[in-house]
Image (cartoon, rainbow, N blue to C red; front, side):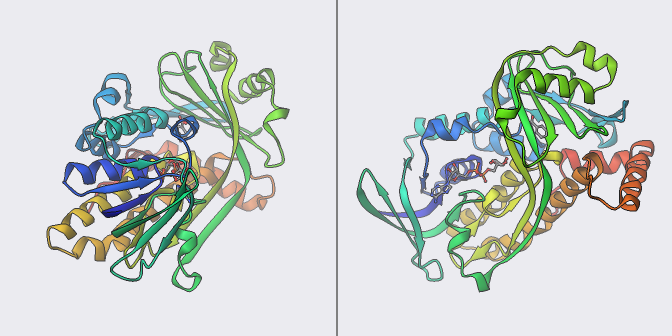
Length: 391
Ligand code: APR
Ligand code: PHB
């Protein structure tokens, strides 16, 4: 088979890239290791920056997001029992975010691709990438026991942190920057009304908590927990009791609890690979970087990479190499700003029992300054809604 672009991975990055390329007349196939149900079953984040909203509209898949998504003009920080609202709309000249679950966004993209009759190979095994340092890269995979090969012009590595694309780059050609955090997030999804109209990020002596949502009837909560803990140790009752203990009395009293639809523990890490281009292979999304979810940047960074990569590939077929030549440089400038914000929010809001006492006091003073100064709140707000594109 021959195609212009072979996309590895049918998560948000791969599906969005495929849709934007299709809209511009660039043909692409997506090769995905898992089944559609498995991809949809991964419960992930739910806050979209305007850049992600705009890209979904450009891809022609924004209708349900606008119908069912929740525009949010602010969020709050609950710091040792004191609540402070960050007025996103007021501090950023009218910007806001959209609360819309990644599962729903992925479903919209999958439906659009299927309705357009575009090729997607699910449950592909033994996926491998070859000759991306030449002008004729190839992708090999097996499906139902039969071996297949795709000849293409470009390979888009949208296969996530554990994918095959980054792993196929010679170690001498790539640099990893990484920080692993000494705790995880225990997440719970419940068919209960959210405890707060806007997101509530909680800093407490017992640990971080986050009160989020998927709709007016479906809530998403997180608790900082030790990496040694397992989901089996956390009954629903234990989860709700611990969440109440980290909330202020009024919020705790209004919490509506219910059975967990989903419950899981995710580790937290900051990770960036440099560069993001290797001849005809490009990395995008979680294949290129990971952020701790404290800044709600994971999905938005994937969208940002795809904005650059889709334009670069479309421009290539229109006769310009400028986009592919500057892809890595442009993406990394934006990636590192989002990495910094996510790292900072994680350091400021979580409990680090092993941290040097001075450093902990300095972090507390920094948070106190940020939430009590317009300049500080503006910094948080500008980064949370998404920094403007400069090119
Ligand atoms: N071959 C084919 N597909 C693969 C392979 C492989 N060797 N390895 C992984 N995949 C698939 C995974 O099954 C997954 O569906 O690649 C996809 C990668 O999707 P994501 O991990 O969702 O990454 P991305 O599309 O970059 O989206 C980033 O999604 O995971 C969240 O927190 C993350 O919000 C961020 C966003
Ligand atoms: C979520 O709703 O899953 C969510 C929201 C904001 C975050 C992280 C996760 O920062």
